[in-house]
Image 1 (cartoon, rainbow, N blue to C red):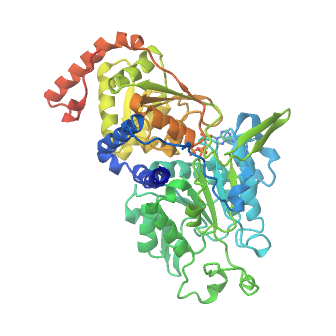
Image 2 (image 1 turned 90 degrees about the horizontal axis):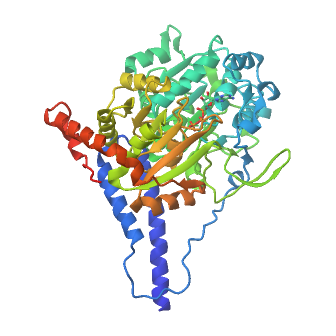
Image 3 (image 1 turned 90 degrees about the vertical axis):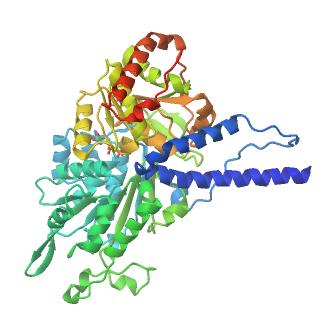
Length: 576
Ligand SMILES: Nc1ncnc2c1ncn2[C@@H]1O[C@H](COP(=O)(O)OP(=O)(O)OP(=O)(O)O)[C@@H](O)[C@H]1O
């Protein structure tokens, strides 16, 4: 019996390990993935089957002795991860007037005020001075001739991470004489890159610094023209700061004559956890390689030549070179030292809002890092989940929009087909200004839809995970997970589209009863406990049923008339 028990234990621990590994690679697949959307239904079936198996485990004749509670494994963390600088997560209680943060250039203070920013959020108050300090001797040399430490920032969605790197980088580069690529920001999607380059444009306006956006939205030749210019004396850079997506950037590294990253001082990796994924990791390696490339005809330019830094020795410190400092930002930064190791960070410092509160004092909050807690959500976010079955999901959404009068709602599905079908249904039902957002739309249509949603012309935006990460849409009151997210990071980024910048917001997740256990466990494992169960009674949905069925018939007719494609046939006609 003892042998059986140990076999069982081994199996269960193997399975646990397997689960974690699959989750890692699945997350990658999922998050890399508008492309993978087509496979979604198969994945969902597998997921449902797994949940079912968990809910009703096969009967066993074995008597199990002892308990098999999951005991949290305490990872062995290096000092910088184990003892990070804690950043307050309560934004509104911890605003710091911009004048109280030392070292900010008066010109930037003025710009901040002009943009309505009177106070810094906690992450900005901590990270801006840290970056400025690392360049206090100018950008050509680290403090005291030493290489500056890399910086990792893990702070909730909407906590203002963008300004925390934009302000110090613009300030450090204000004094530059020659235009060279000194700062490079890499982001996973075009929309995010556009958003960040807009913020850089605001703060570099009138400074002479040039910001170039490289995302593939313009032709390759046009982007080349924006990056370099050929003169009789050779190539010269037309960009000080580049904001780019990985694919196009690597194309320019390998194919654009005269494009050089050899003077690169700051490499900013936003949404860093996603960028560490296999696909993008290669891009980061290429950037670093390009930054330390040795020019053949360097000649007199030896002062600015740099080689990949090795161990610090007396000899190496005789040849100071422009340091390359890495700055990593994310709301879901991995704490996995092995993954972070891949980025070859130099004496990194971690700023994090992932902590538990020990006790509240009169004048503030005392905090303590909690290694079991993996992520932090915005303070103003309320989370609910609605247990339901497949057939009642469309009615629940209509109930929220029409009976409960929810406004400014961002609703997520797990595939673009699902988004499209749901959009057509809500449109056929009527009474709600609705739009869809996914890779089905072209870039211009996407931009227009987003603008209309931001202006309040659209009350319900049904979207794939294309808007789940980083996108800053003002005034989103509700996030609805129409399809429950399968991975915790997806959940955190989706619900983080509301309750931004210290505001309040509500996230509802429609969870099939069969998914409920797994969904709650996923949140619990990530240290998220404060989600409320919010069942909706069948009676509340009844008034909508007749019109809903009419809408389905209308849709079917449309399909038959060939006005819409046949995807719509997949709708299940509900019976109550
Ligand atoms: N100091 C400030 N005062 C007022 N508003 C601010 C301040 N800093 C940032 N904001 C606003 O807060 C919102 C969220 O900021 P930002 O997009 O940088 O968040 P984030 O931390 O990068 O979020 P995510 O992780 O979702 O990408 C933006 O609309 C931004 O303009």
